[in-house]
Image (cartoon, rainbow, N blue to C red; front, side, top):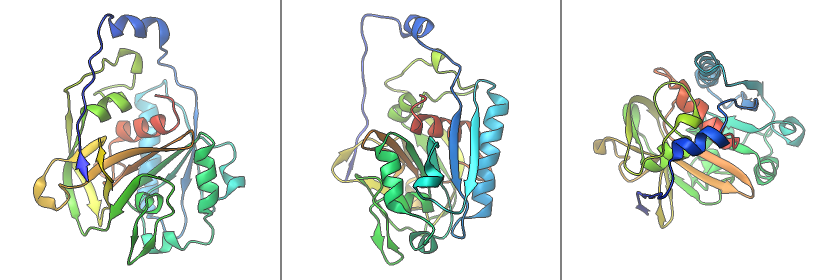
Length: 260
């Protein structure tokens, strides 16, 4: 596996002027379904809810309509924009009879989004190991099991910054100016048996690990993918756990829902 960074140069116009006439900072509401079953961590689910509420408080232009569920099938997914599965026990998650992976695949293929964190990333990937097999929701993302544990920094790549329209402060895509070189390093992401995410061949991650001695240097921290007309974003580290990163969580969900 080869990790690449990419750059894009745009000539002939001022993106700030284009944004003024074609962009709106007001987002349509996003319907978010959060899995809260036996396999999930209560702290992780509560962290997601905290991040969504905090992001809305900090950004009055955002509206997340979130629901929790311990069952995932086509009926429950109907009317949702993004499904989020976060941290928990991967063996229980792989074998949860209340989850229909085929319905999740169809949900994404039809143009909706999936966001997986830690256990949710294992489940969506093509992982195949001692704890079971992933559901293959993401056609191109593989992962290996790791015993990495603790708090580590990660770096959002220029690709991640441009894709998520990441910047400090409020989430206002109309004022975002793309960069071909900027990166942002964020401290203190909790990891616990985090998945080592990668794609076969050449690929560009949204985020990478900022420290080499963790055993994660060969893996991506955050990767994106598509299935049909839907979007998938997987994170090994926990942006929803203390110290939480509400604006990053919000941007990941907004991207998965095609709002940015």
